[in-house]
Length: 325
Image (tube, rainbow, N blue to C red):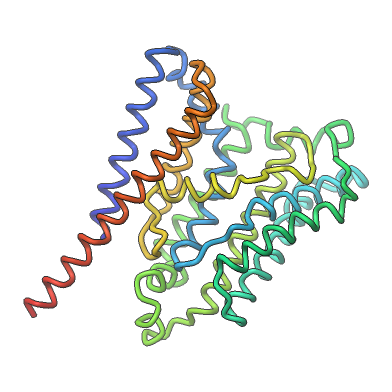
């Protein structure tokens, strides 16, 4: 399985390089380091969200409410900033993480304790959280002129020539890599995705682990809420509407199996980067948005086919080993 993942990620990385090369034939400046840094920065929020979705999908679950979580949390911190501009940005970020954690915990509790399928739970909370955004805001928007300069400029500040938003994405990527490869919870997440029944016999609390991954995805949604609102400087009920599809697409393209147990941090990041390159490049070379959607959809279908073939191949190997024994 590990070799397949490495193979898959190498091919995805190669595809990204080829894509950049093809785009550069039409727009030579696209491959400039400065522009590629900008593409990475533009894709940072999607990368962060894809990692939060990844841990959920690895446990054979899904979180359709991440974009609504982002919307609600973003509105909360935007309204707080508008009403109390003296609140430090780190405090607002902590509030965003806490609000996101609560929303994620609600999802996790319903999946864990009430044993409701995650797709049903999060389809419901997708609507509830966005409706709650309308209730909290009264349907009003929070515009740029209502936000403090610090709120807007924090993520735009540069350190070593790289925006803070990119640094946040890099830190989140590093943390997820450590958690998924060096901790017990990371190993438990993979084990549950591979075989939930065997995980129980191995002493893993499947329900509690699923609760934890929904809490993680909730916190990621909360963090993305602040980052999104401060980047696009507007908070409304329509923020990130439908964006959950982009998040899931990034995971699938990155090799995260919807069946659970297969995927990696690098794959999720590369999947998000692939979509980010498409969304940044195709308008520049005057390709219709409809073609952008078609290319993204084709990439998703191809990724699902590759995932399915890889899983069948793994299954045949296991059967051959069992027969030989």
